Image: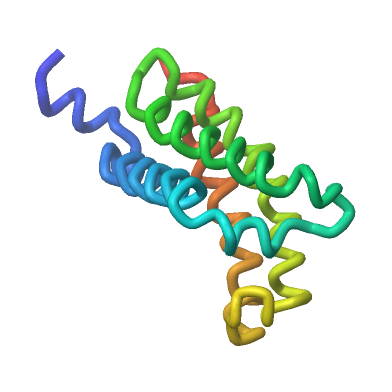
Length: 134
């Protein structure tokens, strides 16, 4: 197949959108280990306090793994599938942050504006969760 034909079949924005998502996931994942306190502070209170730091570490691992997985053709779809429920679960922490923006010394409007971003991230992940067209 010619290079022009390959480019014509590539979805809009590829591979740059995938790289952007990967870089963001990797950076945030690393930040879970370097600076876990902000992530721990917005954990919903219905999770036992003893689980907050381990869950933050686990989500950091998930983000790093997804960042890598999105860039390996054999694992790209699995990474996209994993990210959909992952982003839905992270939404719980974002709700906690919106209800209590003082936890991160954030203006309330910023915390609330961040909520719709989760839908964008889920849609972005769904892009890679689909079976590749033949």
